[in-house]
Length: 437
Image (cartoon, rainbow, N blue to C red):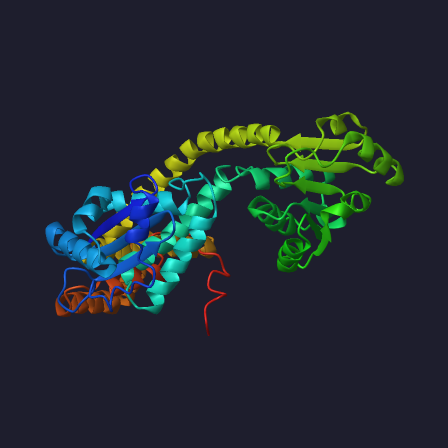
């Protein structure tokens, strides 16, 4: 019987130095011998990100054999101490591995709860495994199920809602004030990492244009070029305040660079159009007194931290709902795993045929618009059931032959379950529109 194993280390179990040492970038399970002709592992997928390194694999050998194979290959590829790997590693088996993978895909195991990047990273890892032909029936199904579970968690809970980073929270506040950002210009004062992150969020939110103002014009131009924006020197800051609506400031200046008295004059020239300031610098870049002016909205980093902490608390509450969904989906996957034996699939196939036969019999009798005697009814019922059994006879014999001929005929059993939809899954009409013709 095939078993599912998951070996890994992440930001909770291992320091960044250890994670770097055991990173599996460019690891190919076939080339590195993790999967071999007569080896204990038949399928494998590797997920290697800055916060986690995990090997998901399937095999029918004893757990000890699988574990030795995985850890020796992993430590050997990294030329690192296997005991250090064991000390920092976690391990899950069968449904424990399934639940962990669903949890990771749904971003409940991420450093920032609800962050969306991990799902994309998992999809990339799966695409790589498919390309390298290291996954088969079980991991194929498990990964597709992980993606659908993540989608369900995202749709039915608010675990990914609301900003939990300072730069993202800043842009979310801007959207609350202006609504549609596509008609507004934004100015970044300072060209550091926080400014760059804010620029990404602003562009994703559809802001019309980004202007980067910095003490060093060259650095401003470099950042502006990334976002097809414009650049200016810090000396031109006040002139540019006339034309922008959103200002995110994050310089390393030792004292404030935007004063209330100067802004009062600028507001008159702007004809008092609203202007929104986000000051994420410490020490602060913007005089707190600007908040006393009409049509000026100022938030500093403490205001944003409160927003972030409140949002994070909301996400944690939603995570409990998400875990309930994952439990339900793990149970469904367990049923599917059991169905990969031949007999349950034959039973399900015949039961489905029986249901169809009874349904069509009742429909036919309704169409006759008159009662039939018992003998006629039994004859019609026998005919319907006989047609179903004869129709399913050849597929069932095929499955029995392939099970005898091959030690592992799961791919045929899985195909049969999907062809006849024996698991009663909802399949949209456009489910395969992206498949290659």
